[in-house]
Length: 274
Image 1 (cartoon, helix red, strand yellow):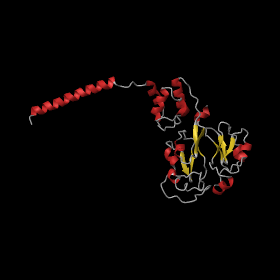
Image 2 (cartoon, rainbow, N blue to C red; image 1 turned 30 degrees about the horizontal axis):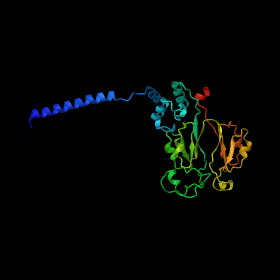
Image 3 (cartoon, rainbow, N blue to C red; image 1 turned 180 degrees about the vertical axis):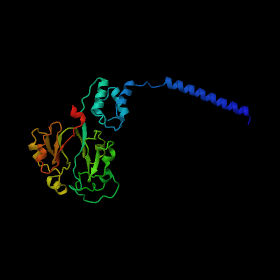
Image 4 (tube, helix red, strand yellow; image 1 turned 90 degrees about the vertical axis):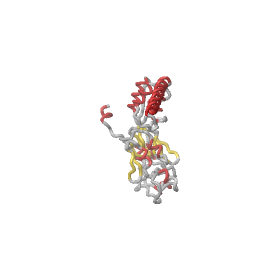
């Protein structure tokens, strides 16, 4: 092939490429979507966990909603009060956020609630729950296969002796563990000293006693002992209202089954100085 023809072909291709590049550059400038500086600033304040606990499609979605005034500053659980305050100050709206942590409403470990059968299958609670209700003797109890552990990004929950346990010092209240539990045994409560019923069994007392040593029997002794009316019995199970509970601990001393326990939040250097 003629060398001159090859040179012309290469030159033509280069010219076409240059023209296309210029056209694309102009188009990107003319058709560019204006950047929302407010949204970008808010996005920088968010922790980037993209957990979805705020109800939006990750931190980008939440930042966009905040910038448009379509969301409140206190919805970021991983960021907690610090992030909520920063965003509230930036937007001029303020933010009053109560930190929350996860609590597993089950103490049915191997010592308290032995398995009725040996489960052999996919090592996930969601899978075991589909097989005759799991291996636990209690149909409401923790299956201990760790779906919640896998969901937690903060190493705040572990399976100990067959039952999940939350470390409140690491929990940021992202709710991912609660969403992962197929039996809905994990609930979010304010991060403060309070009484918590660590049992989810809703069977009558006689049936509960047969399957678990620490299962709630709905006896009502805690209700009578509580000076603030913070405890009610529904479906043979005690429920503590954290907004009324003052953390006196009288109900836990009265509980004959030991399923009512005090949630103790260890003091940190920050709140010690406060």
